[in-house]
Each structure stands twice: as structure tokens, then as C-alpha cells.
Image (cartoon, rainbow, N blue to C red; front, side, top):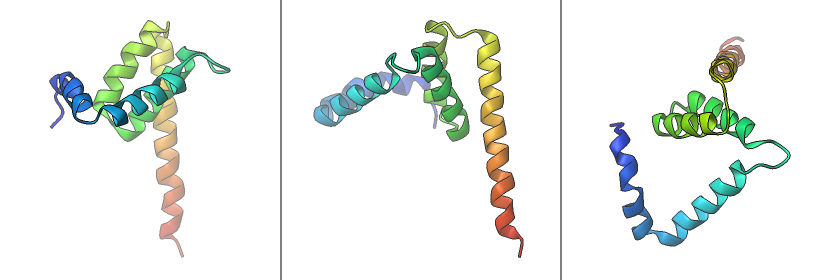
Length: 100
């Protein structure tokens, strides 16, 4: 189902629902803008979330944005392990639901 070419369909989607897409674009821009947290860190956070949600589109978009914001290969690698730790921790703590 995943095909990077689907990203080229976003303008068509925008044409069909322009107000909703404009609202999404404004939220996305505001959420990822430099603020108390620099954009590079926000992009690394977005990558960690994308790794846990396993969205291939988000992974590609935010990997490129993180690199453009100055993220290094080492920072990308450490971001991977933040996501790994969170997913493992979630499995561990949810595992407690299996016990009496």
C-alpha cells in the first residue's frame, strides 16, 4: 500500500478539502516551528513518533526535514533507540495486564 508517489496526490486532496488541508498545514507549520524547542529537536521528536507509529510517509518527510535542520547521523541513530526503548517499555508495562 505504501508508495512514495502517493505524496504527489496531496494537492488533489487539498483541492477536494481546501479548508481542512489549510488547517492541517497551519498546525503542522506551527507545531514544527522554532520555539522553546528548536526545529531540529522537533523533527527528531517527529521521527521518534513516526518510528513508533511506523508511518513510512512520516519517516521520509521528517528524516529529510531533520537532516535539513542540521541533524547528524548520530542524532538520527540515537532517535531510533529512543523509539525502540519506548516501544519496548510499552510492551513491558502492558505485559503487566496479563498477570493476576
